[in-house]
Image 1: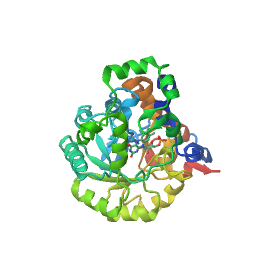
Image 2 (image 1 turned 90 degrees about the horizontal axis):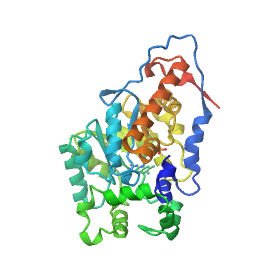
Image 3 (image 1 turned 90 degrees about the vertical axis):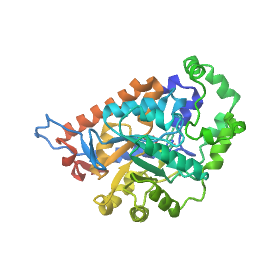
Image 4 (image 1 turned 120 degrees about the vertical axis):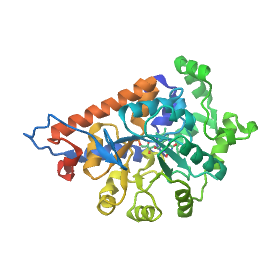
Length: 366
Ligand SMILES: Cc1cc2nc3c(=O)[nH]c(=O)nc-3n(C[C@H](O)[C@H](O)[C@H](O)COP(=O)(O)O)c2cc1C
């Protein structure tokens, strides 16, 4: 439905990966190499999907991942996702490049996390953190795997220059009058939390793209993490870690946890799937910090596999975004309900009543 409703360039922005999209495809195929081994004749008629996550119970082991420019999918896409997450009782992560303001999303209620790209202009960073604290955001998620811009070749096909759609994309967009009407009614989505810092003469779409590109700090390092950890009193996660060495550092620098990710196949092409390195990191760190994993999760069974390998929770990027793109808040709720139903069903068929009973014994590795 998302593919049909969105203009090609907007759908491609969600759907696409880097270069030949080998990692994008591998993120799905990895799940086929992990197969289930069920136990039978267990009374699983009463099941619970609840897990503890950073000091509180959540009714299912999911967190909505940060995705930028959600307003391209649906006006107020961030609020739609946040409300769906709140209804499901799971945290929602707002991207630095969200198209809704921190305060507006806070009104959706629920458990809110803020994702931070380390930007050159520290006034912007300070402002984001101060406003997030004032609005009750509980967790800061610092993303460290996207400060080198990746080779997303569909960008080159969709745009003739930064922010300027190709003629072909313009024409194709005209085939989506519903989407155009929404944009005309609500205005072009803005990077709402950063826009005040863009000089007015640079607020055109083109200049804005260049501004964003110029703001992402290319030389981020562990010292930056130290500074941010000192500034942020709440829970602190680092998103983009895939080695035990970096996990150890994250712990030393005061992180409460990490998100193991390859950015949904959008950054380093032929990067490992987080599931391949998860077991090693689990062995050393599961008892010491929170381990969240993402990239490629589309089915409830995928989530159960990550939990069996020792993850504490799973972040969902595209799966719920497709829901929003298809139908706004009800679409996001529906996507979460599908995942919930699938996780529940898989647990039952595995002969497990809760995640406390899920471990590597349910998996066969091909
Ligand atoms: C359209 C889109 C935009 C994204 N924007 C951000 C972002 O602003 N910040 C960030 O940390 N990660 C971003 N990501 C990565 C997601 O947080 C997450 O790691 C990834 O989507 C997980 O893979 P999945 O989409 O296969 O679930 C984005 C991903 C997508 C698909």
